[in-house]
Image (cartoon, rainbow, N blue to C red; front, side, top):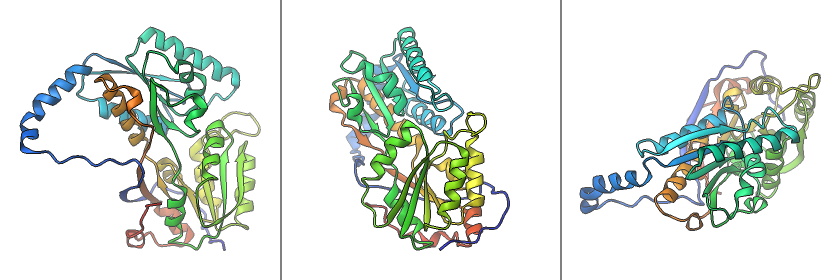
Length: 353
């Protein structure tokens, strides 16, 4: 069942396979006619004028050093570039500071930021910012666009006349299908750090139709729990699905463990293939996965925000699911597991659920 894993440090040697569209909420871009082409410059100029000087406030649940957050911000700025709209970013920092007291305080600080900045539209990423900030504005005058939400949006009162956005769902079935090309998978364990985002994500993962047996859904509190689980799963499953390890705590100090160190330890010590849903976790050493793009989540949210600024009511923009998945593999980990990283093995996999 298990692979033999050689010891040593894992470098970020990655194989990024072609980006494929998943069915669901994708839209087709219309083909321009000649008359469209002649008027495009004038139309684009008018659309820019509509949003020039408008203010967009971005409220992140987490901190700027978190790669997921940085990629969302990058996507937002790319979508807004050239429109003349202004972007201000606020970080609630609830991944490193997880107490209820801080969650409440950070939400209050976000409210203060909003009152000072007076935005024309607000983009709010991940669940904690919805719970402790954005939900208080449901039904208000200021339009909100959420992104990267793991829970059922109805938990926060969404959708609402002034709220729409993009939900986040792990590509579990597609990732299992991809990993199955390298090793038969019949039994898996799902392992994650224990935070509100992971609790919500695991709830939706349990609803995914998959053709393997899940022997455990594990929310680890600290690094010792995590290490014990990985060693246990090495003997009992065909693959370990890693939801997240970003909020794992040091069992001695109670502080947050450096996420990259967790990924590297897991890659060195897991003899069963590991699967993840974030590109930075594959870079840390997790073996394989159909990963989500923070850039896409940011870009789509900003696109919705710009449409609202140009006059489209939020109620006319449906809640959607990000629809792009990128197949990624860590080549060094593949070598340690004794499997080929030849992209020809996976080029013909359909990621349509």
